[in-house]
Length: 177
Image (cartoon, rainbow, N blue to C red; front, side, top):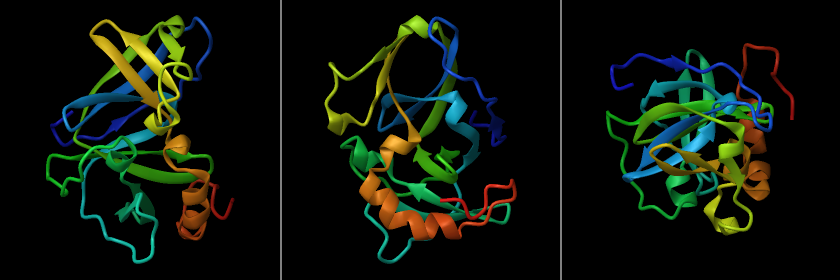
């Protein structure tokens, strides 16, 4: 996935016992995952414009084919050190409800296919601070799975609502809150 091409991921609803696709990515040498059904596309990182008075979790905004997209710093959520933007970084673009956002990652590792029974609820295993709702048991290890909406707390979503609502969309989702 480091060849500069975009990767588009089809929606794949999670159904108990049915195969589930998980996008596995790296941050600071650690593997994390997100359900592929939440991902619109993966792109190479571009210049991120900082926003004054934005919550600390908001890294800034980007222009994606004429659409303004918020970029979320999930390193902070996972207790990882901040890292300056690097040309090898990627952005996962996806939906948090009705809003399109991007998260900056070091690299996309793979689109893993797991049996639905290999996805376990993380409630009893991980703390609320871990921002992972589930854990995927994959052939090459265990991967905590977050979801885009839970990565933004309700407070941060509220504080960012004006920025998110102002972002134009071209797919009929404009102006929804």
